[in-house]
Length: 585
Image 1 (cartoon, rainbow, N blue to C red):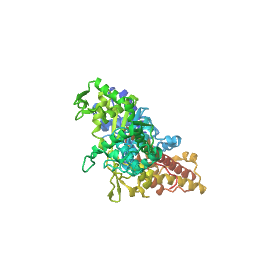
Image 2 (cartoon, helix red, strand yellow; image 1 turned 90 degrees about the vertical axis):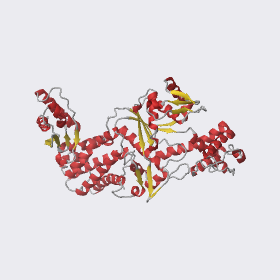
Image 3 (cartoon, rainbow, N blue to C red; image 1 turned 60 degrees about the horizontal axis):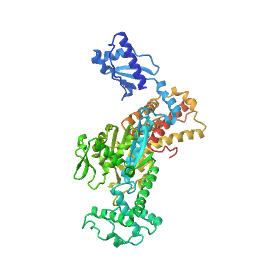
Image 4 (tube, rainbow, N blue to C red; image 1 turned 90 degrees about the horizontal axis):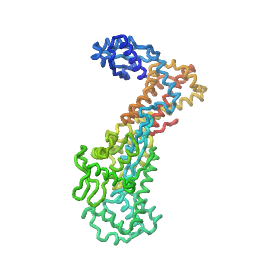
């Protein structure tokens, strides 16, 4: 409807140019917005105010000229000029009701658009280190990333969902050492567990499975393992101690057996993460291995390209990237003096790989603690010859979980944390997914467990799902009472929907495609959550004010058709957020 009104205004201005009332080269910036108060119309434009200087007339005079020359349109019942020169448009009831025909025709596709023009977009999200189960902090990034991917797909983008598996580096070796020591404990080979090891119960489970598969083949005596090791904290350095255990494991096991040990931890946790996310209705097109970057020499290739472009220098035996040339606060090491490449070097290679795969836009969803990392990654992309503006980083604040008034502390290393699986078991997948996206990703969020479990209008997901189930139940119940819903008859009598609540509901249904387009362009799925809450509230208000069980079949079927159109939009929106639309509650 906004496009129609804008077109009518443009035609009026063209007519005024031809008549000489406006200069032929007059350029109009036509914007049409929803009115806040429906007493002042349904849509409004400030075009007369923006033309005042160029047209050398008062805004109200311009507004009157535009209104006088508007082409006739059945969709517009009247226009009014308000304030200093706003033009308010009142949409006819028939035009308003036309949205119901559109929803019936398009069904699950209603709301989808093509603002993305099939642009290739990659979204990389969660990407938690496979060193332990996902916790509730990861859940927010998962819900946001999956909902954003669904939203962009609905808006016409070609979306690829990716998980970057950090399966290389020191943390994975610490996990391997932790699994090994728990494996040895099962054979009564007692080595003091390092303070810097992974202490969660899941490590023992991995060790037990490893012993079943590997038997005694990875065993060595406690004396062979501990001889000459530097002291652990508090007497010694805990970092030096765990690194020494890792080195000892490599020496005693040899490359092949160490790889078996390493893979035991990696495979078990990665597979658990996959299962966990699938149960959270989050799936990926690609699980990208960090280790593959080294195996395929992509890290070395990226460093060499930076060297060839003059962006690398040597200092104290290490290779440094001149990231300060691109706005970073200091230069960054990409290869240490011992020849080992850094995590940042892997990140450079990974982002080069992303853009070489042909994505127009790459969206990284990171935790808020990665804020300082953005500049250096963008600097590397610029140095490699890519457009760094095509990398969009969305920072997600971890959700803080409260049980009652007590905040739950989380630490993967200590094993004291609430897993995403535990959260789902307590409040359910739907409430978890919805609550995570009720606010902007970068905003602080407290997760209220008690509210998420409540069956009240204060719980937004319950309130929305109840509206959907209420419509399904109403239609089913009326059918058992001899009032079978006839959609065809309902569509033929939409003009009967002339009550204020009915018109307001239809106008809100018409907004849904616009909400999707706007939310997709600014990467804000919370706009969908808020829209659905408002739509559910309007329906509950309508249902409570107007009877559906009436003898007038024409009006009854028109109301049921409006209700079912509302149900369809609720279902469409919930699907984008990964939330079920139940028929019974």
